[in-house]
Length: 124
Image (cartoon, rainbow, N blue to C red; front, side, top):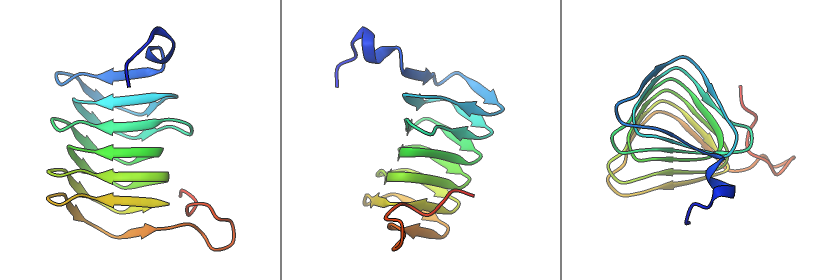
């Protein structure tokens, strides 16, 4: 997708040289290429965790793609992609999970929709 001024304003990037300690709340898209020590949360966006990134904390968002390393739990309302070469050490809850060959995942997963509501299991 090409970035236009309209969608660029909702695209946030944490560069490789950024170290952030604390919580991040956002709308739109967030690409993390640096290090985050804390939580990341969005009720309406998507998170891309770049290959050079390390996250030490929980991440909650409708859509998450992991290329880097996460030490924490993922809570996804819709789709999670654990890409080749990524490392997730923590638990995962999602409606849909794509686990690529070469991804490392150490934890428990709960994937699928709730039989009653048709939605992903609620975030804790």
